[in-house]
Image (cartoon, rainbow, N blue to C red; front, side):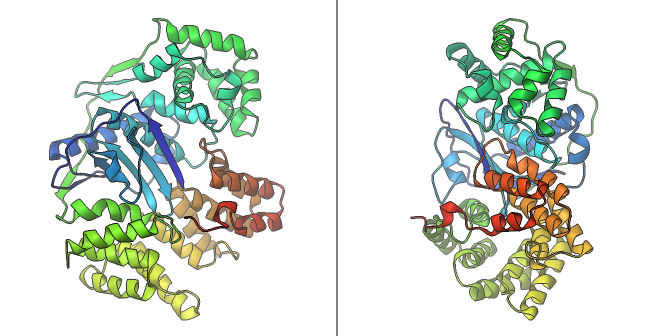
Length: 490
């Protein structure tokens, strides 16, 4: 699971509201215990921001294809975003993409808005599914565009981020070679320098073509430092001096233009039931927890206690069904889900969970699970989790899929290229299908994740095996037990 966090200088807290709302637009589903006008404004702004990114980048065409709405949660206190664990109080938001879903969390004040725009820039960049970018550029791109601001009359982006600039003024900079090398390192200074370098490469005269040539070379597997020396500047020390001079000068520019007439975003707001105050965020967190999570006991405690406060409420019953599915008895989960499906037979998420609750170790069980997944797909064709589950049930990791099943898994990847596990599944299916070069391309963005981690390491090894045509090593690596999973978490 990929998870990005951005540090702030200080924490914010605002009083919680008693009523949860959800605002839906074409591309977002935003939840918040906030006033209706605020959630409407955030929804419209996110649609504006997505439109700006699409207009200014070559990712726009890929991101314009059908995609599931991104779930966003606005909270008064960031601690509410992690009901089973702890989130550092100096975090204003975070983004997570894994098998259970793709979600973004942010506090409601201005700092949270900046983080939300930063994280959505990552989400948008990854939507192409083909980008292999150095870490500094991934973070610098997000830092650069998170300064975007919208008014009824104009759009602005590229302004100086004062927090980042203050670190550059008062700190000893990372050497250019360290900045250019992946993954993310150096803490806040790394983000500050990444922002500064991106600003320079985007806006200083003559630098954009050099940046494009450098990024193309990196995408073609040239080392970041070597590519930079070849296409941007041979002398890194001298270049950093020029960069410092640019950032310390008064010549830094921004872009501000008159806002063209546009159709306002269609924002539909509805109230959530009272149980959402206690259960919405726990359910969202529970969806992304694996069955062996070290947070199991805390999750059971939180969900059980919250559900007891709302006996018989559909959201409480939903939470208990998912809790049984994750940590309890699959028979109990199936019984609870069957009761819920009697009331909501076309609920795609419930159908997906029902398939998961069905033992698939017999032909009849597998057939029953597949039928539930087909119903789930018909109820919501954009839920990539259903498509992935269907392909896995058909043996995506263990056998060669038929063309139609491979198409199902490819669609799951196209809908959720941000999720590393989906890319790994699709790559495995491509290797089974005799397409190792295509598999390596799918793995490249995961292998080059700016924050590294276990899945990035796995993807690098799998990519090397695929490029070498070594199928045996590919699958031996894929099915090897991860080192950190060899013992139980405390």
